[in-house]
Image (tube, rainbow over all chains, first blue to last red; front, side, top):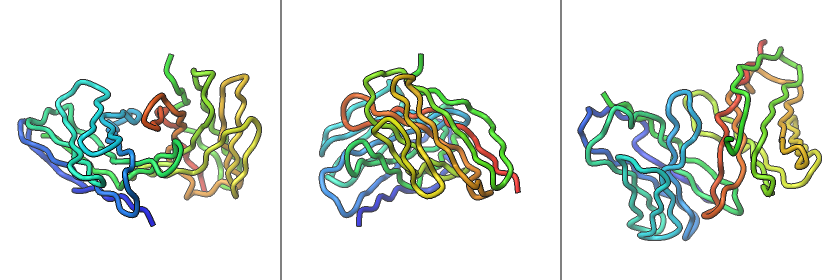
Length: 111
Length: 111
């Protein structure tokens, strides 16, 4: 069966520190992968999506970057975190059609 | 105009009642519609999707689609306290099998 995992689940980082969130899918090949952010009281905002290895599309200009070094691995990074980067980060993938499934999420607090 | 709009709530219903959640969308060409449930602090999970005008039933959940009026609804029959969550409506967006998400309606079922 297909599964998606992301980690870490929670982290508290100081302003200016780097960030790396990792997402891995199992049981499928060449999935479309996504990073969303959900800030407090706000909707889901698409940050990046990838249709294949090394192929990254950015939806909004920001302090973050994404990479897809392997078919089933998607990484969200930042060199220097801002307070505004705090939020709930969700990795997601498409199993079929437009049906999107989410990982467990990562809570990031920048202090 | 936002692609997807929902009343943020909160919507409170007594246990056993029918909860009605509504969503409007702006793209008249949208063909499919998704409902997700998100418990506090957790990632969204897919409840159901609907493609055709009319009703689609799945257990206690019924999705209703009216393309002429550009709205989609989710009815929850025999509401339970465990249904208390935020419900997100989503419609496809162009490219990469992605979805626009509404900001969600928070539902509270009172025992």
